[in-house]
Length: 240
Image 1: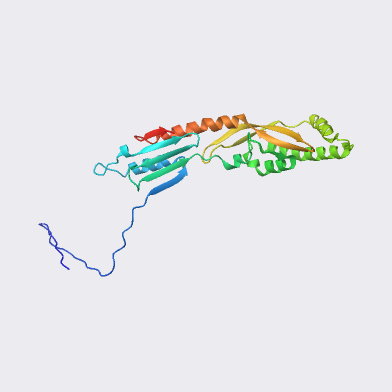
Image 2: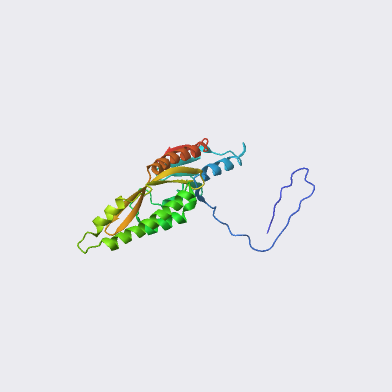
């Protein structure tokens, strides 16, 4: 094996090291594909921009971001024409604890289930005292309704009518306040939840409705998307 070495003027010492064995196998470049919270694209962009210099500039013309407000996502793509480019997708994640409440959906609970659910989620209430009052209310309501059915069933199909009459005479809380982050990683927000009761045969079902929740969901989504888009300086941002 012949080795040719060019030595520049002024070099006094030249060390040539020869090793036996096999070279490391060549590997394909690794594509960067990251899925994170909504702050991920902005953080990635701000940190990576600092690594580039005048000798090694960042070509922002090959970067763009896709903004999807309906899906609550920002998708940053760097070096877009390269198959091994960097893609960072950030998503606004709705607080899963709040999703369990089933606001403004067909989700229903029996009085017993509602009492247990409220008790297990007392940490989300603006007032734990109000939460425990609701728990007691629905436990008591379950008992009183069951008792009235047993006493008023005349075997002539009048059971449900009797129960409705008794229910209308019971004083119940019709709403409560929660104080919790709407989205993961965001600040707590206080909002009102209304309680609706639906009588079905011999059972009362509880539904939860919150217009404020829906309004905050929409408003906060726009605020967060706008805030994070501003961090992507010099990047072409496209609404999709």
